[in-house]
Image (cartoon, rainbow, N blue to C red; front, top):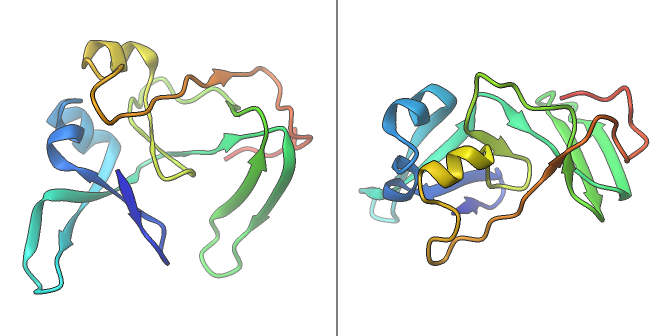
Length: 139
């Protein structure tokens, strides 16, 4: 996985993403094409946006604002990472504000994604209350 600098558009290897199942990927993500400098499509890579973005929240140096141009939530925090509120149960693949994917643990195990070569995974706890002092903030 990577992202296009300047517009923060995540990219992912097509074969890797499709391990989650084409129907699930197309239901939960918006997909796009990647083009090389010659204008030709690079079929091994695709861009994605989550139909639902999850904000990975933190405990230190918390900052939040809404972009005046596009209306997106811009959130930054360091320290212990976690999710709040609990993600929707009818979605399995989420775009992360940290340019990655968030998937339920059961899906990562089912698709054998727990430790494939070159993949780093982090377990995120879902908390009942946020630790960043922004209790009224939902995304």
